Length: 108
Ligand SMILES: [Zn+2]
Image (cartoon, rainbow, N blue to C red; front, side, top):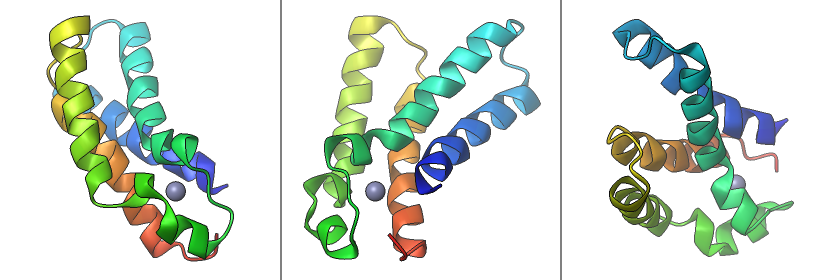
C-alpha cells in the first residue's frame, strides 16, 4: 500500500496541477508524464527497498542526498533526452515526497 502511495501522490500532484494550468491538450501525453513523475516517486525504493524501519534509515537512497541526485539526473535528462523543463522541479519533488511519506508513515 505504501508503494501505491509513493506512486500516486506525485502522479496526482503532477496530473492535477497540469490539468489546472491547462498545459496539455493531449491527455495521453499528460498521462505519460504523470507516470514518469509517479515512477520518480518510487525510485528510492527501487534502488533500496526497505521492509523494516532500520533498513530505511540505513539506505543511502533515503537520505537528503536523494533529492539532490534526482535534480542532477533530471538536469541531465532535460538536456540530453529533450524532456520538458518542468521535470527539473517535479522529479526532485517526487523523490522528496517519497522521503516525507516514509518519515510520516513509520509502520514499514
Ligand atoms: Zn522508501
